[in-house]
Image (cartoon, rainbow, N blue to C red; front, side, top):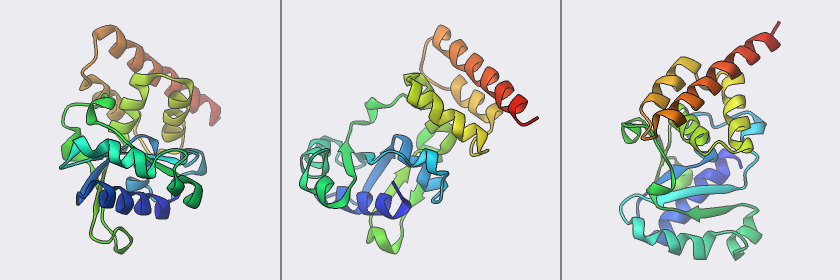
Length: 181
């Protein structure tokens, strides 16, 4: 997905949900902070969004803009409407979102999850694709490992999960450092 496509997704999702704002979750939220993010971070053709003021309208977004919809066939990407509970986010995440409001969003606003919050949330899922995504964020210096560890401490997860994530960040940081030499 490109930044232009993200702007289109924000505008379209707001239109369908009759809302002026959406929260952008998932990997493509990184485009809010880094519109020209590394190509490995832009592989998804899906924008995950929550209608900010009318979260109960997420299903409308799926029906109109979701996978295999006419929108998907026409534009080559789709928009997945979600509830905010679909993501496990660090405490205080809402105060750190990155605002995307441009002429291309036509007065609509996308609040993108900040990179460290996004990385912490991705690690909770701990799927291979999520770990690789965070690894690229770290490798490209889009996130700082110490700040990521702080955000992991702020996640609403049990201690065992938290320790696993912290250890993964430490090991990945060491691995990335050793590959630079």
